[in-house]
Image (cartoon, rainbow, N blue to C red; front, top):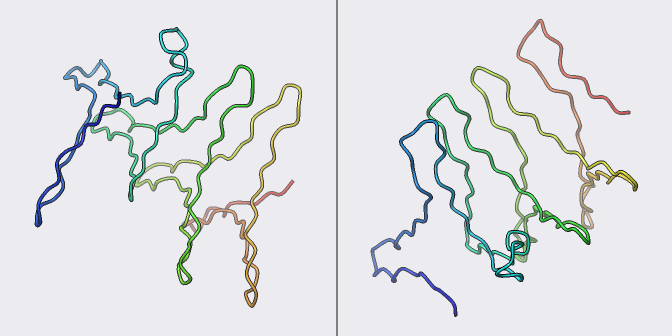
Length: 178
């Protein structure tokens, strides 16, 4: 049967109740904090392959915020990794990041932003967009294509530029097309 863990409904004038699931903490700087795993069900329960045959997990809410942990020591902050599932007999899974279409006559669709963070005293992170290497087939394409504008609207621009610098003695970045 199903297992539901649901806080009660708060009355008027009161916030909803929080629900916190957390891995265990440690006071040791040499040990790792505990892991919290949320998994869908398996289609091979009771076998050694339950890690590889898990079902879907859905998070469905108005706002979803996924953050990695912050480090207040000499260690790096936490990382976030999105990885599709592997397959030993077929194609691997797909990762899709998209905003939904607007169904409102005056509403815009959401913006998708891919950006590294700022840095006060060191380099900022790079953004790498790569396709994989194929040992026997063709490597995947990279397509960056603006959408099609409606009647009475100009087509959208596409701008590729080398980076600027605040320094008067250094050169701006170069844009290379090969």
